[in-house]
Amino acid sequence: MVGIYMKENGLVPDLILSSTARRAHDTAQAVAEACGFEEQVDLYQDLYMSDTASYLDILRCLPDEANKVLVVGHNPDVEALLALLTDVADHMATAALAVISLPISSWQELNEATDGRLQNLWTPRED
Image (cartoon, rainbow, N blue to C red; front, side):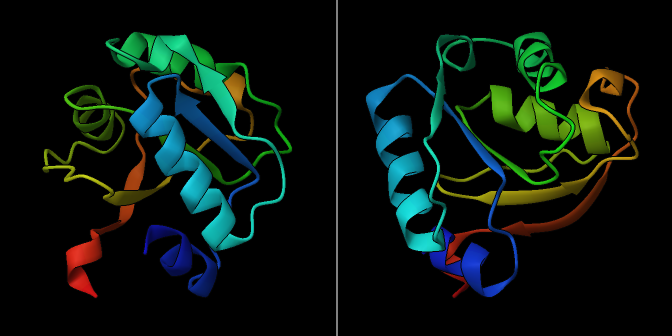
């Protein structure tokens, strides 16, 4: 459902980053197939049992050509990242999708003070 939602709403990512955990990786692969993402899902051990600093470190290393990035991770880290980047403390249910607009021109600029804007928070139950 998430992949279909992404495809229908112009949210097909340029990159998909996933935790190495089997369930996260399986989810990332299923979303990739459903939305029409044709590249390889990038796996990161540091997205499993981690913290927001690890997420930011990974994101800061992304190529600037990647405008839309899907991160498949775990709570409470994903909720903490949402709150850090948007000042919105909301529950990220399983398979929830947060669309965040970031005021950066390079991923290297991303930091704890980045003031992003939550554009949408979608969960499969909404369809």
